[in-house]
Length: 422
Image 1 (cartoon, rainbow, N blue to C red):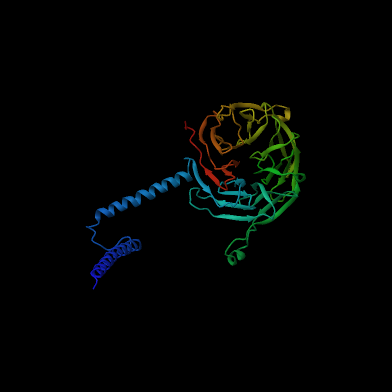
Image 2 (spheres, one colour):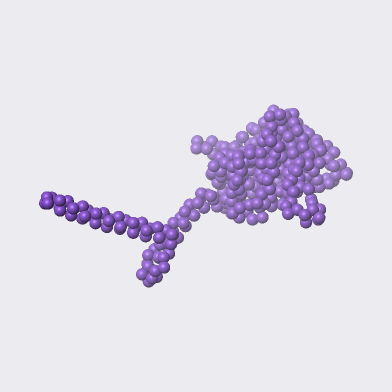
């Protein structure tokens, strides 16, 4: 026999033994890994693994805590950021709180109205009522009517702007027993091609409690032109209309007691109308009674004080003004400027920026204001900045009431800062 053959045979056998040992070790390791994944806590002597278990617990607690902290920090980047309402399919174009503050209605560019129940603003999820607008409509403004179950929506289409009032039928006792769910809101009244087909910028509604008013809800719709129409919330009847004659409107608001309508428009002056009520509580007429003069440039937004006796205005001239409208205007007494504050917001060059929206707190002490995605809280008494959220949303802010809405498909809920904030 050739002497080389035994050497070859021995080499092959030796190599096979090494290969078997290698792959045996590999598969035993893989089996161990698979078992450790399937059973992360194998039954073993706790004394032998006491230290490794403690180390593993430290890691398992430290990593999730760090991740949760980062996630929570991203979600609530500001101490006053209470919560975020998600689930909108497109930009949020309007929002409004109910009079009791327990419901928040949002209008979305996806053609859906959502009414959220906010019994606890800090909860993780919220139930909401979904209302689909007629096809082709793009909601531009929203307000509650008589209660949290009735909503008026402005919807823009190619043929013009329409108003819809959605309300719920109150089921009888027998119907309640038969039905497990309450019926969805349905259209109670509608008006098509209002404001000569021009778009509606804002809707402002309130319960009329002034003078002989009968407590009905009155709603003012402000067009992008120069006209403003007053509507009866429950019936949809047109109660009156006015014209600002100021090239184009920015917005309009009804005072909380239903006595006045004020409009911010292209010019520096703010016009105020009185809603006159008849003895039977119905609206008799709407007549102009005041004009706020003092700003040097266009007024971008305004809001009434909760007592309906003051108006706060923001202007492109870089100032905020507080006006006293509790005057004898029937005797031609002019409204008076109570306070003037410079807008405390500047760009990188030091130029004063303008405010897009204003909203006052129910007690009249705090003013929430926005410029783009910047949200500030001011003291009404001193004009001092109490707090600032530089990026309240990822996109530019569109609407501010007591919450903020944005093109980022989110609605944020905010709490108020302390008046003692530095």
